[in-house]
Length: 322
Ligand code: AVJ
Image 1 (cartoon, protein in one colour):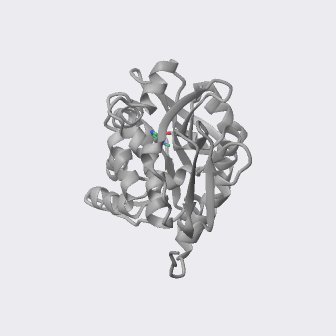
Image 2 (cartoon, protein in one colour):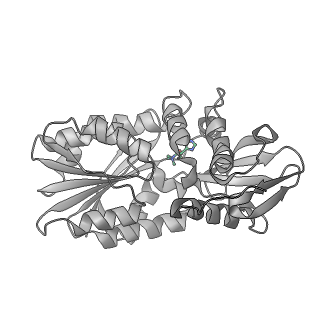
Image 3 (tube, rainbow, N blue to C red):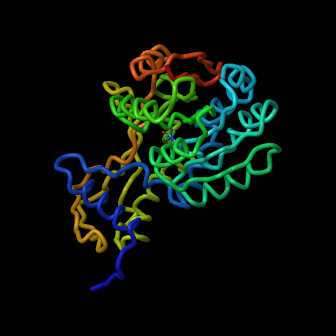
């Protein structure tokens, strides 16, 4: 029998989430935010350079091409907060465009310490840009940033990479509304949204032939083994990417290849799987350009600009708080 020293807050939160998700009646699930530990974040960086995953390149291309037009629509002085900055690579274009007009503070909000450190290093070197990282969940971090600002300063919030697509459509809209509530009129939200495209292209983006996305997905089980002392046999689970036509989203699952039982000591549980049963680990909702505008309008923004990539349907939406 293994014993554990008193778990840290972070470990017990993870353990609670794992227990909740794996004891759900019907479809088992795990929250996608736990995909991004140090290994997961590194695997995601690799996904971003896969030929099949055009999303990140489209996102970056739009920022590189239109950074000037985007910053021309803002009210000054303005500082930048980014939700889930990752390593912050594509943010450089916006920060450089802003630094031509003013000294800029940049507040990356990121739960992965390794990604946050990389981001501080990558973007801390731009002239006239000061980086202050927050290792916090999105809204908690954003509230802290908003609280610390002077009354005449505006905020530009970046929510790039179609991360909003991880939320169900309704929860995504609620989230935009919550972001709006932490902001002031004239503040801005730059929202990246992946657009619907043909099914084959979408599936391949989440089930690449080199197996990087499969490794990214399975790392969640490896993380449960590492952090919660579990005994998942990774060779007995298979990565699966599905297009859910009704919900217009890609779903990632892990399929149990046989009937099996796994124990997760730090979550005080044993869990059994039927052959073929899946754990649902992530959703990536895909949008229509007009749908994003309607969503923005309902949640308290007006859209000042929508830029769509010509190669990989993806939209950059500049939303201004009413
Ligand atoms: C970082 C959430 C935008 O949904 O496309 C990539 C994550 N998962 N491949 C996405 C992801 C599998 C990605 N987001």
